[in-house]
Every structure is written in structure tokens, then in C-alpha cells.
Image 1 (tube, rainbow, N blue to C red):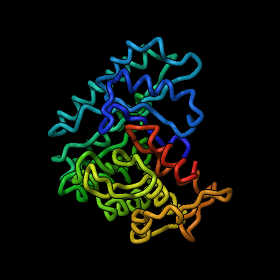
Image 2: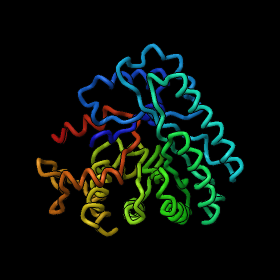
Image 3: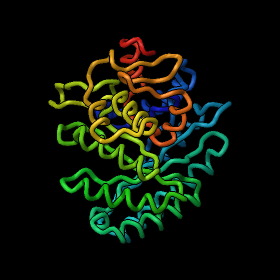
Length: 305
């Protein structure tokens, strides 16, 4: 679970102010569990707001950031114009804080109108990925979660397969603040198998505050667990699991079936060694969470941390 949590304190349900969220992130740099923490997630257009906190940036290390794009827009021209603005914001921030921070990750949804057509999807991703890569950014593309999500996701993954020579990946939204924002276990399992077969990395966002799948009363739905999702992802890569097997892991709510020991990670009789885990984590990378404390508290309650 090294560097598995991207801290997204600005986002629901925490919805902290930038002052609160960034101060938390800086304080976490001295935490014993820093090894689990990855980047600070922030919209590209808000990067300049961090200038006011220059005095609290650590003096002995660089802080990492993930920039979120302005949005998909309605078509190619609007998307690319938004991208120009985002890149300008990223460059300005990096120049102002080159001894204090770096931005090397970028996440953005694609326009639905573009995702409806494979050729347009590939063309826009190729053009945008080149611009982002030239600025030192790896980009994770997202298909907006709608009724046609799987068709759009299929087109996106096909395009990503053809762009594997670039620094690109697939972003999966695993929840939100309403029940309809949560994909089914079948959809998550399909995604894990699809990106594995395409040979592209995946990251997750939203709805993964807790280790194991459980019913959440506040949103009145089953929430995915990050151990379920990442455990299924690791084993899908290490053991070549099919979608049915992956879905079974995603739906398991019994902590006894998940084992971490000196040999590696296991779910029931399926096991991944340390070397297999290292390889698989290149494919299933991290998840965004509005809390860095809740995941760790739950892991300690399960005696896994």
C-alpha cells in the first residue's frame, strides 16, 4: 500500500477549505504513515491559490501534486482550450515553486460527444497526451459515469491501448455522495480485467474511504472497499483472474478472507508474492480519498496496520 492514497481533502464528503486541506497535507509529511500518502489533488485552476502558503512548504522535500482539468467541455475545441489554460496554470505553479513542489499527474474527463466515436476519442487523446507529456505530466482519462458509461469506457480503453507508448492511464470513479454515483461490482470487475488486458494503468477516485465493502446508511448503498478493489486488481494481474473471480473478491465483506503476511497478500487461497505485488501496483496505482485518517483508522481496527 505504498503511496496508495492521493489526498483529496477539498472534495466531498470532507469538502475542506484549501487552507484546511493543504495544512493537513503538510502535517502528514511528518506522520509515521507517510509511506502510504501520495499526492495532493487540486484543480489546475486553483494551483495559484497555494502561493499564499509558500512559507509552510517543507524545506527539505518536494511536495507532489495531481492537477485536475477544468472539465470535458462539449467537444474537441473546448476541451483543448481548457487544456491550454490548465497547462498554463501548471507551468506557472511549478516555476513559482520549483524548489518546493512538482506536478506530474493530470486527470481529466473526456467530452461525451467525443467518446461516442472511437476515431474522435483516439485523435483527441493523442493530441492532448502529447501536450501533457511534453510538460512532464502523466494523464489519466475518465469516461463520465452515465447510462452509456461502459460503451464510452470501452472506446476510451481501446484508445489507451493504442497510446501505451505515452504516459497515459484510465481513471475509474468508484463512488460519490449519492447512490447512483457508485458503479456495480460487475462494472468495477469489468474495468479491472479490461485495463489489465489492455496493459494500461488504472487509478480510482471517490467512495473508497474504507477497506472493505459495506452498506453505508448516509448514501443508502453498498460502498466499495479499497482492499477489495486493490486486492482484486493485484490478483487479477498476478493470477490472471477472469471477471467472475474478480467480482467475487469485490463483493467479499469478510476481513478474515484477506491476509497480509511476510509472504505477500492473499484472498482465500489466491496469493500474490511481494514481487507480483510490485509489478501489479504499476497497473493499479492509487485512489483519491478526502480523508487520510479514516482509511488508516479502519486498517488499525482490522489489525492490518
